[in-house]
Image (cartoon, rainbow, N blue to C red; front, side, top):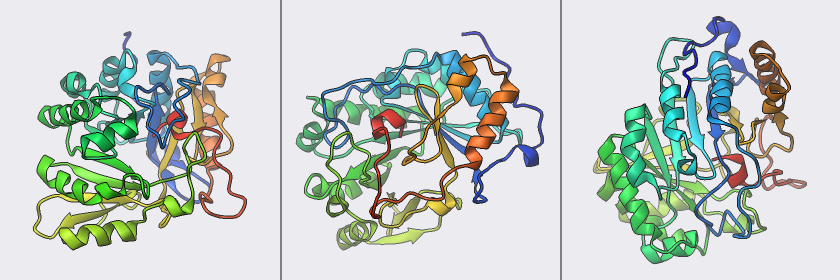
Length: 345
């Protein structure tokens, strides 16, 4: 792939920091590079459809990401669908790893995956410059895991990918588990033990209304309070301080010092006031919130001939209009126009 210039635009950090109208500094960009996935997790997909949106070329993603970095983005997470399905991923990581933030630091570069292809890609991705990886994994016993993914043999495959990522140095290695009452909430205590045995940070995520079907209801959400209480009965916990104000997970360590878990609680304890992120979908639309009802067509403007200055100005205007918060559980709440797999995790 042809190499692009690796320097951010020469504006000052003060002028270029992306800030919304609520005073939040935006420094975290999630980029979906495909909405295809090789799993059909029952809480995410109906199982009847595949990709719904086109993908940009690797060079086009690189150009758009460079614009965001030139405006103050310091963290980029590549997502999907399943990003490891995307040809050219290692090349994209290599190019992004050469970028520098406005403050001269290396871009923080991470990836979220279901882990199915990670065994063979962990070492090449690390060598290309990937910093960290998060694996989505919703059970720690094979039968439950494969019932969720609807892919035979998936548990052992993902476990092998997790161990390969750890061996490659893609650490701290995080495991994300979406909890649904009556579905996989019997895995909570097992995940706490898994965190200690596999030397990973397990993060439980409250189930949000982002599925393709109509599964979500408040009753199915397993809350932060319940998770902490249940783990605490078998493995005492102590709360840990956040690493930064915009951190989404509440952190807990085991009292004996061996291991850590996190809980992301957007439903019961929303963290919108400290939100620092925006998203770019696989077809080049900016989404300023997971629950946005409006998308902003950045790629359409690029395809129409807009130059970098015009595209950067559009990004700034779009971020300024970022929503104050989501409205999950409130009267009149509407699910977003896309499900999670088509937005990007």
